[in-house]
Length: 306
Image (cartoon, rainbow, N blue to C red; front, side, top):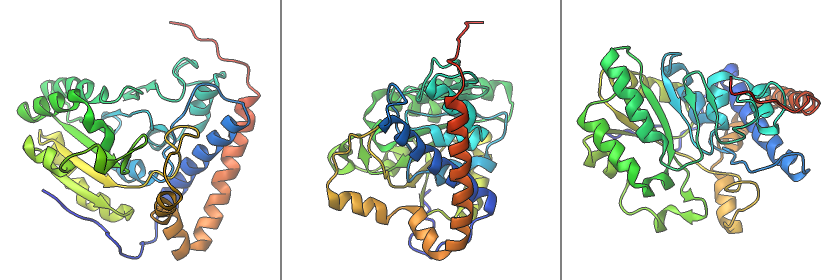
């Protein structure tokens, strides 16, 4: 099953709450790059600049009993789930109040029914196991797994998809297809299509283009309810990665970067609703600036296995 949403239509006006959350994620990611450039962070980080609308669109379709499995580019997934920039930045900076005591950093977060990992393809087999438990206990819950187009190079993905389809497990696979795997364009790392891969296992597929959140939710809502009943689904979001792979390792040409910027949802939306964007973006940036100042002033976190 393939459905294309909002290929080139003028953007519909977003609810203030949705747009605020998308702009909060954008401001958070930009702040991280600034903090790294200033030498205030260690390790690495992978931002979701350009992809903020994906987890926000799915947010009301997922309940507190559902499990969310994220990846290395998962700050937006976490913020859409918990709206907790303080705890996340504390984790990344290794300060008190960190979500995981400062030992998980940017990529490895565990909270309630949320788990992120930097290991490509790792989440899908784990999600299949969790979904098997959900199916056996008839909880009505599901496992939502975020992967990228580059993750289809991992064999564990196909093993997990086989089990998910064979056992009819309640798994929603969300593919954030930004067209590039680290530094490798999709055309040189992926033969065939993502829809074809879903079809090979008899798994339903929906193609989502654009950022009309109301339309996305209206289309995916009934299908997500079917997932809960044992009909797995792959939802492929066509999106753009505005930033580098991690902090500063962008190998794309100037033309490729310009094409990504032209496809950015925020630029398109700002052109249609400049007043709303200016108002809410100012609030988001102010909040993130305040969070960064407050978290940086905290003492280092002290992790305890208890």
